[in-house]
Length: 282
Image (cartoon, rainbow, N blue to C red):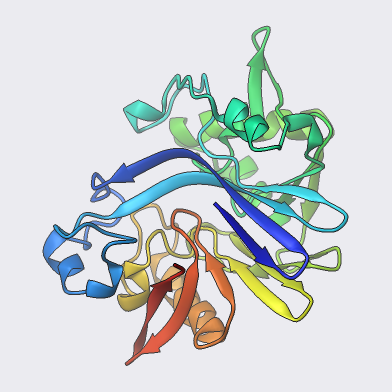
């Protein structure tokens, strides 16, 4: 899938797609509640009210940079809470290469946050060692986010993620720690959007008078635009995440801004009573 924002081109590279099986992350999104939001069907949910989601990377091509935003689950990783996320053997890099994005052609990796399903392909296993997958890239991490997980990865699964997908990047001298509102060139500006994680960032893209927003995990699914208080079980601060959703969606609602989620496809945000709805492209 491709989208354009002025001179910026965005390509979605899918690692995994799911239908249903999302109750563990959004327990309030029951089939019955989802069916009450007909604008979700068919792009974001089935007629039965089962959520459609994906784990994917977004390749952002500006006139001067080739950026991978978030890097999915990765292969050969262990210690994950979700059984199917362990020891994966997915042809993700081959898919990227076939789409025209060989790993060595990437100059920047930008992680909205450092959760398990957004950092996995930061590294790959070579000779028993975790090495940067994108060998010629600088990896941009939010400083707040990086320092939090460096200092507070107390649970075994969090520690495994940091040790195999984040720390090796820093050890290799490839990590750039930035402020949550940093500007990365002419087209890319970061927006602090805490709540899902302590230093979560969304990405604003501006080019030739057009605008795009990569939300990351401010919302895992568009149903959270209608129910701003439906916080994910993975949110570190559910109250803050709900406040962040309201603020971010209000900023871009009823504008031509192209919005792409960390786990859902492109659309536009519209005000709908006290909350919002999401209109899919195409």
